[in-house]
Image (tube, rainbow, N blue to C red; front, side):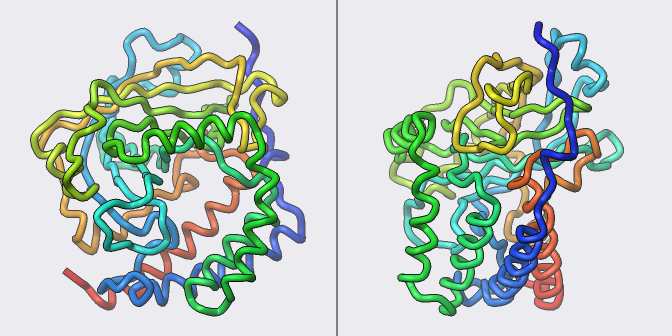
Length: 332
């Protein structure tokens, strides 16, 4: 078995220009969240991404009994408690029956004392179309300003065009076609991915969650939210948890997110299980304020990479602004 490539801080370091753009972006995030109730026509401040919550549920992370010896040190218990949030990636909460199939499966892992071990916001598309931090920050800022009617559609389109070259990879086109073919499938029938890399001790990994035996046509006539809630009220859910390990930065690049990792086999490390009728009240203020910031994880489980690094500040600003507004509203 090849020797894993070790984590190094160099993978996360931002330039001065990128840090300046990040500060501008943080201001746009705060502005968006402050006006998000108007943007989405709801009675609370929403997240700056994955604004719509379909459902919240409790679950278990069961560790594989035959997990490789070198990984056993990270999983010293047989099972861990989970809180799982199902969401849509859109910044705006749409009222339509069917949303674009951009789904989130965010996982909060806790120990037996209720202390946080790790947050993993997973999505149903394995790649990210932007490798440049500056291009991403400018685009994200322009999207926020567009929703707040501070930027024109033409300005936004010009920023989007800068992203276009990044999508011209075999990996990206393959996965776009796959997503289009599954656009009407049930939310729980999708695989979910970490997109960027995470630390596993001194190693670096990507994560994949692969559901078992899910009818892709479940709830066809229902809204996505109703279909998901109906399923979880009456069915157990099980998904395999798989990881890829980074051995070579050429085959498994950390800061090139628009291509799939190759020459790194998936290793099963456990299962996610949700027992039927384990839903939480997703409309409760304390649940809407839950944070799934992956940088709140223990040190050896945190994200790796420059694009990932941006998440920390974005999550913090979004949460702080939501807390300030929603605790005052105390909506029910």
